Image (tube, rainbow, N blue to C red):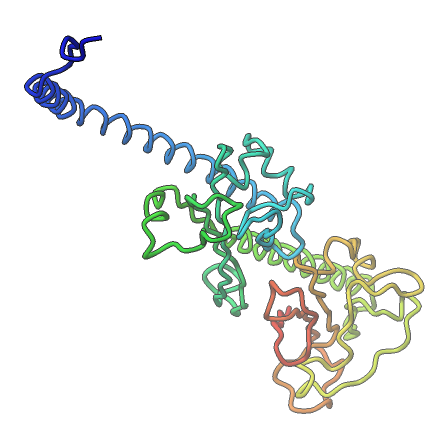
Length: 329
C-alpha cells in the first residue's frame, strides 16, 4: 500500500473546522445558557412548592396532633442530616401526605442523587397580653421552622447540608427556602383559654346568683361552689396575703370528689374546662380577696372568686403559687 496515496484533512481544513465550531458554539452559548437556567429555575420553583407543602403538613400536625403545640423533631435517620419526617411516625407522615406530596419527595427531591430537604427549628418566647391587646401577660412559646433544598445527596457524609451561608452549593438553592411559624396556632390556643375562662366565670356567677335568689332575703352566704357539696372535706383556711389572694384552698377543677368535679356543679364538664389547651391545670378559689393583708375577712360579703393558671401557659405547668395568672370575678 502506498501511504503517500492516503487522504486526510489538511491543516487549513482543520483550522476552518475549529473556527466554524467556535462560531456555532458562540452563537448557541446564550441558548444553552438559557436552557440550563430555565431548567434550574424550574427545579427551584418545584422544590419551593414542595417545601411549602411539607411546611403546611408540619403546621397541620401542630394543630391536629401536638398536645403542646410544637413541631415534630428533626429526623436524622437513614443517613439524613436534618430531615422533616421520620417515615415510621405515621401521624406526621399522614399530615404531610395530605398536602399532596408523595412520600419519596418529603425528605429529598426524589431524584437519583436524592438531594436532602433540610429542616430546622428555632425556639422563641414572647410575652403576650392574655386578652390580645390587654390583660395580664403570659409567656408564649412558639417555634420558627425552616425548609430549604440542599445540593447534598443524603448518603454523602462529607457534604454538610445544614450550611446555609458561605457555601456556594446551598446559595444555589437559596430561593427554595420556606419559613413558617407556630405562633398563630399558639395564639389561637391562648384565645381558647380566654374563652374557657369566660365560660367558667359566666357559669359560676350565674350559679351564685341563682342560689342567692333562692335564699332568704338579705342572705350574705358565699354561694360559690363548695367541694363539700360533692362529698369533699372542709376547706382549709389560708392567709390570702401569701396565697395569691385566696382565703381558702386553691381547688383543682379536674379533681374527682365522691360525687363529681367542681365544674359539674355549674353544669360544665371538667374534661372541657379543667385544663388549658396545653394541659396545664386551672384552679379555683371560692373566697378571693386580693387586697387582704390577713385572714380576718374570710367569707365576708361581698364575695368574689377567682381562677388561676401558670404564666408559662404553653409549657402546660400547674399553678405554683408564685408564677401564676389570677383572674378574679
